Image (cartoon, rainbow, N blue to C red; front, side):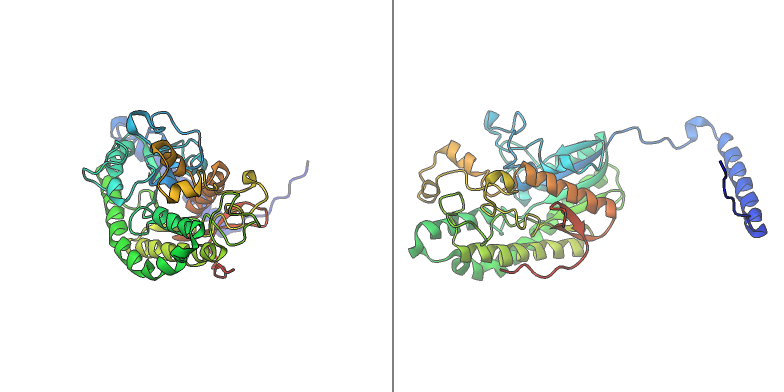
Amino acid sequence: MLISVRPVPASRRVLAVLAVLAASLAAGLLSAVPAAARPAADPRPTAVVALGDSTASGEGAEDYEPGTRGENGNWCHRSPAAYVHRTGLADESVNLACSGADTAHVRFGAATRYTEGSQAERLVEVATRYRVTAVTLQIGANDDAALTATAIACIRTFVDPTVGPCRNTVGPRLPDRMAALTPKVEATVADVRTAMRRAGYADDGYAFVLASYASPVTEKMGRLHGVEGCPYSRADAEWGRTIMFPELSATLGGVADRTGIRFLDLSRATEGYEACSRPTRDAEWQRRITVDPRALVYGRLDAIGLHLFQESFHPSAAGHAQIGGCLGEFVRGGEQRGLCLVGADGRLHATTATPAPATA
């Protein structure tokens, strides 16, 4: 077999000789250092850790981990299908998120959610046991953004049109809600950083990603959407998709910019795969409502029914797989800001391009 070899210029031959000499010198110096004094490789397995609320915990993805399915009052609903387990970023993936958590449940302090204490406090222990390479935070939905209360308000309007469209009752309050949410998320970011510092990490020693939320509904629903699991008016659904979720994403993006952490915009992550946007539920990346909407609106759900409602309008296992893949792409890409969009292959990908705004 013939191999084509290009002659090496004299200048490059000299540089090559110098490089060999330098390497030999470095090796000799290292051999002179006692083995006990040499820096050892970190033997701990690597890990990616998720903190936050129901969207991060895997609510809606089902098959919840034992101990988070109501046992002893713990309804955190952490799923092995949650996106943190689908990133491929580390040897291990650790989920500290809990359904219904707000910023107080992530921060240091005495607040508990479903019997579980501070997620930041537990992060210290996890980051000590593992070599954490990435931390994701998804929080704010249960604070002033009040996504669940807003969803119920929009469902109430559909069930009883005399109440008035939620885009008119909730919409004018969005700016004030976002303003109130901002300092809470900033304080949460600070506590997560403090937790990692306590475990011995420099601020630039791991990827820290704040993520926003994907709109679960769209005005582009089927004709019988109301009885098929999406009891929203098309106008309210459009408002949520094109105004409310983008505003929440912009608020969280601003927090990331001011605090110097990375930001992944998920507001359009399930675009075209929202609840009731496809002929069958299995083809969608968001769950439809899981309870009778009238029972929800009029307070006729028992405790089990309310926990079942938790799963409504959250990413399915398929949705989590797509989000996890996009998150992995984003972290590996090293960009400060990114956006998850469905590509030509029908899968979710991280991009830094600025697409046209979400429109009807």
